[in-house]
Length: 238
Image 1 (spheres, helix red, strand yellow):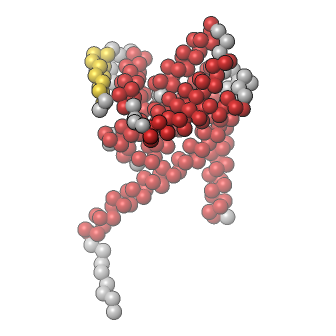
Image 2 (spheres, one colour):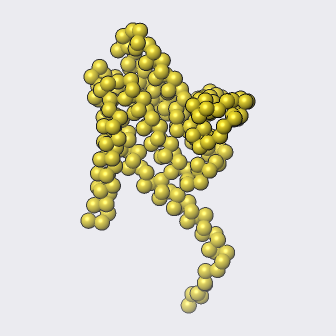
Image 3 (cartoon, rainbow, N blue to C red):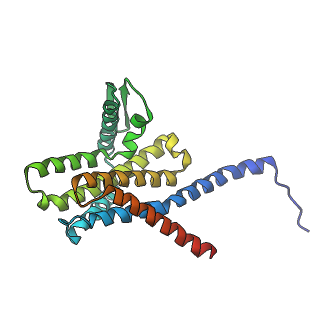
């Protein structure tokens, strides 16, 4: 007969990391429907822009894919990312009424010293795509002085490119530094960063184009998320 072996304390401890990883993965999976919802809702808002053709809308996705290919096949532009990351700290500090006392950047990381500290200053670089915002501001400025319709396709390509750049490098740096944001899990953090950044992009588009409604985007996200969750529930339990 096989001997019975009781679970001892050492066994329980060894199972703990596995259970934590499983819980974190499950937590991340619960955000996947929201990721899908914000993506479809943003693309739906792009289709509302009358000055955009269906072909032009594809440039947003092409830009994102182009960066992923560049990152995988060539190199990750870490220094450029760090510059934008630290500058976003600077902007957040200024918005909060603080002053910058030091600024340091290298390929391995950077730091900014400010006279004020709060959660907005600390987290702004993770959830605000600095280069995407700069491109949007340039596009908006150009639209004041000239017809920007011929520039819509390149603009959308650059938005997709810089957004993918921001999300991939943010997650990459978070993984290396193992900050508190990753305590909820790597996959969960990717989803959370992606969701908030897409919301920011939707807000930017709503300011640039009259046809884009930010409230309509948020409403669509809520409806699509509910529909996806309900569909999963029906498949699993009904």
